Amino acid sequence: MPLETYRIPVGTWVDTAVDWMTDNLEWLFDAISSFLSALISTLESVLLWPPAFVLVLIVAAIAFAVKGWRFGLFTAVSFSLIAMMGLWREAMSTLSLVLVASFVAVVIGVPLGILAARNERFSSMMRPVLDLMQTMPSLVYLIPAIVFFGIGKVPGVVATVVFAMPPAVRLTELGLRQVDAEVVEAGEAFGAPPLKILTRVQVPLALPTIMAGVNQVIMLALSMVVIAGMVGAGGLGAVVFRGVTRLDVGLGFEGGLSVVIMAVFLDRVTAAFGQKASKRVSH
Image 1 (cartoon, one colour):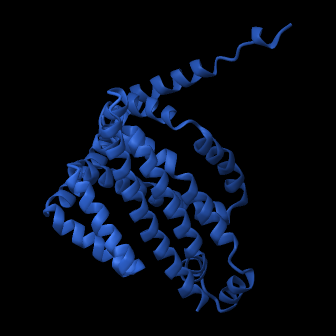
Image 2 (image 1 turned 45 degrees about the horizontal axis):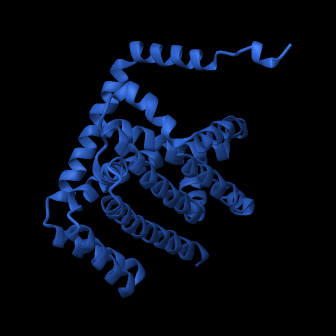
Image 3 (image 1 turned 90 degrees about the horizontal axis):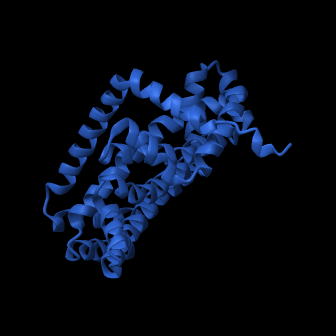
């Protein structure tokens, strides 16, 4: 008897679970939607409040402080290019989505990584979940997000959080597990409680690895936010999507180039913070 005759209705089970959550957890989804909408709109308003040249100077100063004058000059020129291509508002919208999604992913992921590092059973339970989250095609996350939150920026952020969270969990757990056991035992010998050992010993020593996880979260969030432009999240994702649907190579290239500029800036800045944390630990 061929295996195809024994069909397992996994999709039907998932649809049933989604229907139940839609009917019974509407209050929770409304609360999440209101919180994320307020966060996104506030951050976007802050980023769009100063004139473009003022914010260009601010990000260039940040780049100069963390990586030197060459990167500061590159940042000033590249962000000015975004403004002169007429994509400043879209870029700031995308930046607000990336920052909100990364913040939520880190706030959820780091505590889960700490718990996984301290509890072997929880770690073994999280591992297949994280594997699923990392290997599932990113477009699939948009389907339940649209069902629960409708069209707009909120489903894009929610899908981005789910897609980008695994590195925060994995690298936080890895960093804590790599802390020398003798250092932890020395803290215990001096009578330090577990919470103080975690916050004063383990987390500071694991900070370079944790920051590497934060860097990966931001990069994944930026890639996913562009895809989220397909469901009304706006920003540079919408620009790229319009370029694809209209077969407008120039428009698609401008949107993609703006994404690359922001990705380089965010990657270098977060990597620099990780390097500084590593130097502090080594000293």
